[in-house]
Image 1 (cartoon, rainbow, N blue to C red):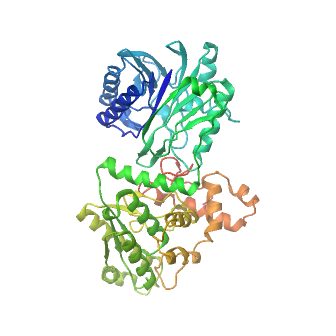
Image 2 (image 1 turned 90 degrees about the horizontal axis):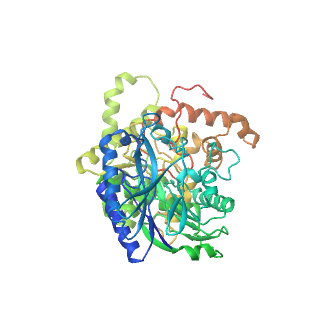
Length: 545
């Protein structure tokens, strides 16, 4: 038996586009004499569809896609993910299902049993969990059909669920496992994925065909990395990251085992490729072509510009240099050099007149009061107004350049440097932003070395340095990581050797600035806990504030 794995980049609600991708994949699979072709979770509509699932018309269009796919299943079985209506009034209205199509009809379907409700997932909001489990019999083989999370509770020390779909099917003696997934990217997830799949193979002694999505849906990025695992636990194949492709496998060869094929999983390279994919699909799927950003000569805007240039083409990224009286000559020079290195169009628009107009307007109200963060923020907001005006006039989408460290502690100005339609590096700590810059320069100097080596500064007052207001980033980022990703409280963090007053200060800054993050652009998710839909915190909470 030959099985084709179709790793595709779907588009939420683009039914014709998704269907055509799958039909093309079916054609490729047929040309390679495949017996089965498998697609990802909710592949008819894309993942995550969220509240689109509440529209009857949306579900009808999913059903139409399934029916049109079924017409192509006369010479090949098609396994596709799609929402399915629950025929009984009790429970949720829908199932998240894997449908087995053959000979022009739906031969069987297996609903998803384990419905995640953590981090970015909210599936129990929409779907009823499966209560029946039956293998699919096809050409003398028994197939255990599963959907994404259905295999993720094996090998965990603290299981989230009280049922295991594969345990329910093992007495039916399946010959192999198919898993339809939509498993989002984070820089450490590929290794976790392999560990979970190997735990399943070890438990059941069966080969597994695991297909994942590739591409990005707003802030959620899918890396592909679909897997075929032999019953001996060897990785028979791991598909490329961030690519669409169809690849066929002989079941008998997979069953033999003995072959281990994996890809390198270097953190910064993965983050780089994920962000480029996220930018490309955000623009492509919304029909945008051109971006704009403020280019300051600092590390954050430089890395954002570099990633945008790679994703969209440098000619489609407009850099705007907006020096103030506090901007150093080398910052302007570094920004200009980066734009020239890429062949990126740029404008220089000093903000003095704009800033002075605000100051003059407010002078009578500020009389007798010293220069402070108010005037600093007015500079950032002057730049924000200019960037948004150019964005409106030219139709370029503004990219936000704030990093995760700054977003965490509120080191940014609402309606100023926090403006933007997409936050490119908002899930990348400052220390990793520097690592990304080095990665961008791995073959030649594109980001000026001075941008990387000079002390970080917002340049909003004379001789300002980030270290005037924040701890060193090496320390800050580790405390933030423990609090945000690891959900460690102050006691646990202090026990790791960090200063008690410093920890209290950092955690307080994180919590009191939730209101800022609530108003920011979607953040491309590259870690296991990004700001946005996967981290839901109250704005008015008192904890540690």
